[in-house]
Image 1 (cartoon, one colour):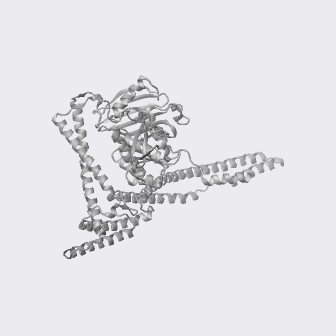
Image 2 (image 1 turned 135 degrees about the horizontal axis):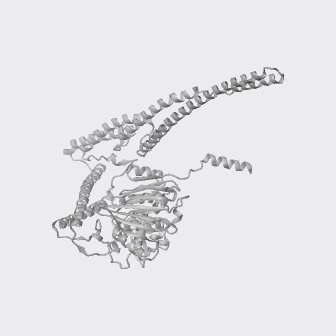
Image 3 (image 1 turned 90 degrees about the horizontal axis):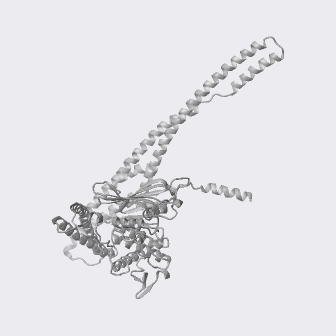
Length: 636
């Protein structure tokens, strides 16, 4: 099954949020304290619980925090909701009709040996085909390294069976009964899987044939063997085609564009053009409003105040001089002042109303403009991930370059077809001068994987034929699993760990063996070393290799969670680790966190599911920090 959705309620810095995931590589990217590890911790907290769950409650909330996870696999689904403080759990599964059925509801505290917890873990084993809590933690608990290996290099208790010949992945056996509904469901599932895998098998077969022919052609080009006289004309023709191909490659390099443009580039150009037109229209709408704002003049208080002073002074002087007409003069001045202030107040209210209305119009246009600029910045980031210019002026030039580039590419691919190199031209697989196609030393491993896929296809086709003619049974409804996995022995599991460790350590360590529950590495031929005597980087690589082997052993029953790449590995080995994770994610679901912006751009280019997290607390600017420090130094 794959993790489809995590819903958080009053959980940490997220508050209430929802995150979608998909099959393959899922990258959670963000800066420090953005919640990457907290998001990964939500899955083990939901499945197995967490001690003192109230510490995960969002600040200021009084209600309990809650996590809901949704898994999907074929036509089946699993939905689990847990209150992290009261540990109330509700577990539901969906059938073929899409309706949800509750299979467990109760209180399951973490690390408590109760009948309810044993019943709950039994349901998890049945639904996910994962035997035992240690194996479950090895997959989903990315925060605790001791869930896989202890400090002295021992495997976590209960991670593997004591018997070296025991099956490590086989679930508890059940009675096989005939169920027509499940038979049809398995037939439909197998037909769907075979349709996809057959297509992948044919594509892989064609690709290997092409890459093998390519390297043979490169070898022939580099050899200095003399050609016979009867092949001189063909050689001259081939040399002419190669010269034309190199000239076209030089022109493509002068264009400054990749030889294979992204498929969504035309849509990106259309979006950029629409944003430019939208910004131009908003600017035309904003300019007259801004010009009109200075023309709105608020009435001054000078002349009403002078009139008031004169209207008060004249009756006062008449009263001081004991003039008989001071009273009529006071009444007349009072009437004049009322008229003057009434006229002033009307003008002031009218000007304020007009100014407020204009400010509202300007604010509405500014909001639209800010939204358009935000979308333009997002589009610019998308252009930058492809290595293309993101300035609006450069985009217009880029459209013209793309038309010329497309014509050059068509001519280039035609020449490659004549040379027998196929449509997938050699330069199309290069980026930054590095060939991304398989190297000659990688061909045997790729052929072995293709052969394994072919053997898997044959087994499933035989199973499908047996199901159709009624000679094969299916498991009972309450113990059904969407896809059966072959049983693994301890020897096979250790071999898988060794293969992953070899890739992670760049060939430094190749063999692993298990002695009394402790893993040992082959430091030299015939000499075995305990992990405790190795470096931190080797120990981190070993723990990652164990987790990868466990996930591979279970065949994608649950996603594998990895909180950042091993930090004690050098740059070369980190790239090897990332390459190994990409290969693993081709057949499984992987959740990886990282704060590297270049990794996020690579994820966008490789079509990963990239989830970007932002800091919830605004950071203090450097200028303000320097100003504060300068003030403190001044006081000192």
